[in-house]
Length: 399
Ligand code: PMP
Image (cartoon, rainbow, N blue to C red; front, side, top):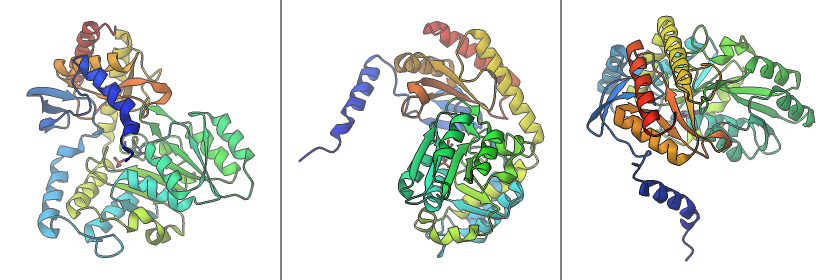
């Protein structure tokens, strides 16, 4: 018998070598108690959370929690069925209405996760013989959607407008083309030049899909994302998003103005062949989305936090993923996995949780300490965070 797990031996070895240095496993942390969007108890210690995607701090919002409790009581704990059979309850329709209001778009389709939204929409739109043109640093769910649909994948250099144009011009004029972009790229927290890119896509007859997972709720005047901020949202064919970040629960979606969009509900396998989300999740998402429509003050405070952390870390001497704060993600570049893990642990001992990211999730084989800010972090917490980075950075020789 061939052991099908032996292909993972190099990874098992790398993990064992890392743990032998005395570093705790950075990928199996348990939050023993969660006190607020910004504070939890980990290893018995009160810890500031700087590695969640809870950008707008909605997980503990009173109205959001109340809506979930009410729906749980009224509709039960789950639907036990697909959206196209017995799994559409009124909270699912209401949640899709909330998305249509939020984006001012005609159609909204909710999936069980953002991962499934990309998997489903991309694989259903682009099949054999079609082309998906994507940024090389695209999220795994985008690549998996391309693989599932069997489309030709054409990757271009990260955020490179000219490279996108060159690739598009080389493709057959009459072929089906879908360009997939992200508003904010989650590893380095950098923003895409959507304005130029969407124009080039239109000029070259390609449809466009933008994943706004990390910008929804925060970027743009109404929190609709980078496409809104750069004034091109009306030219984007499909926007993908998730409820697992600013919305503060779980689920994924696609919104569109395409007149034929509703047919997707019947032909999109990751939508049809899986159970729908629990009605309590739909009620929390709908309430959160409607509150995010009126969260201008929170957005302003989150920008302040992000800029303050970026400047503070740069002044301390850390190498960062972007020259200035472009989103709520600030990535600290570490020289290698071992020192990254040591720094991660030193920060945890100080009482700070950040995300350790490593290849293959990261671009250019980088090890990153990814900091993601929350609108509920106070300015004092950001000062505390900078003090912790200074202490940990000096302790492990990173600065
Ligand atoms: N797209 C992007 C860009 C993401 O970063 C993520 C999750 N990190 C997803 C999609 C998937 O979202 P979900 O957690 O809802 O599956």
